[in-house]
Length: 317
Ligand code: 5GP
Ligand code: MN
Image (cartoon, rainbow, N blue to C red):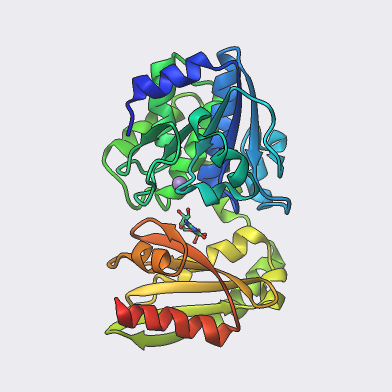
């Protein structure tokens, strides 16, 4: 692990930078990419924001200033420095993973996932940080970056969503939010854009999904589960589908919530959430990763196959 001064030195030494967020980006990933690109340009550097996937990501993330410019790519441009943000492991950089692995000596990793082993030459990791944008705020201070409105907006986007709208985090998260708000942010509009925008089709999709919640028991744990097949997933927007997990984790008398989202026939992304157990251990065992309260993984098979696999892992742990 490296210090803020060492991370700042790596940034200062670079002239051109590629900033890479994780695939299936969330607001912390896009917010971190956009804020970092903005900060680097303020420092007079050439900077580009990248996501290593070819399919589009959630529309509502485009409300983050600079998101329109973030490129969906399979190749790394010729730059002095690569900065990965909010990527817990190198595979989270998606199609760029191979190219980054070949240039680790030029890679600065900035992240808050506890499972991050530090896959760069310089690793700015803080596992207590609520969001990657929290870490960036301090790094920008070190670099003398001025918190302008677009940068503050992008940083706030990651803080807002990764704290579950300030439900969890350290006391400092509020101090940090206050500092960002003092730049003149319209926090109400940002919350609507990122969390509260549902179409009629979304509400109907959510209704069908919620009506289908199943409760399973394994290893003394009770699991609330939604199986969202391709038909259901495609009937709503991406943010609405990603939001389903915030409902299943609330079922009284359960220990964890899971949503299986089928993105291609028999290919699923699984989201896990819990308030009292470590779901990152489950996710890691099933080939994914994440945080203690929120984690995920991908899996092949029928809904029954992957339900059985999750229940078997619950029993084993
Ligand atoms: P979500 O359920 O919102 O997709 O992800 C929850 C958390 O788990 C996020 O912090 C995300 O970074 C992590 N996560 C989700 N899917 C994967 C995965 O396939 N691999 C890894 N390593 N982490 C994941
Ligand atoms: Mn994050």
